[in-house]
Image (cartoon, rainbow, N blue to C red; front, top):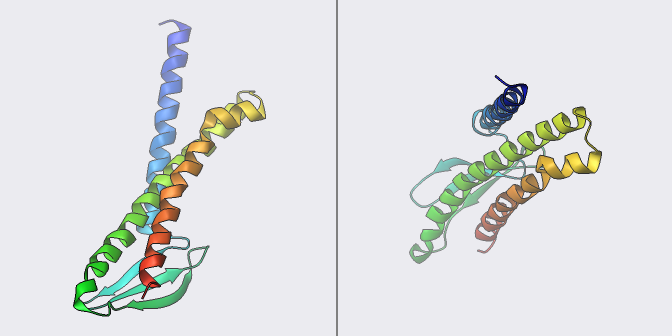
Length: 149
C-alpha cells in the first residue's frame, strides 16, 4: 500500500477510536453514575404526584421537590415532566460525546503542530457548545413546569 493510504486509514481508525471512547465514557458518566449537573432525577412516581431530586452544578443532591398538579385537568403536566426529565439525560449524553471528542481532537491537532486557533476551529468545540443548548432548554422547561403552580 502507498504511504498516503496508510496515513488515511490510521486517521480514520483514530477518529473512530476517539468517538468510541467518547461514547463509552459519556454513557458511563450519565447513565451509570447518574451525573446530572443542575439536573433532576425522579425518585418516585405515584398516581397523583412525583418526587424529584434536584442536583447542584457539580451533580450533588441539592433538594427534594414534590410535584402535585392542582387539579385533574393539569395531570398532563406529570407525564410531560417525566418525559422531560428523561430527555435531559439524553441531551447531556450527546453533549458529553461532542465535548469529549472535540477535546481529544483539539489535543491531537495541537500535537500535530497546528496553530492554536486553527486547532480550536477544526476540533469542533463550537459543536459541543451547540450540543449544550438542548440540555439547558430542557432544564428551563422542567423549572417552568415545577414552579408555574
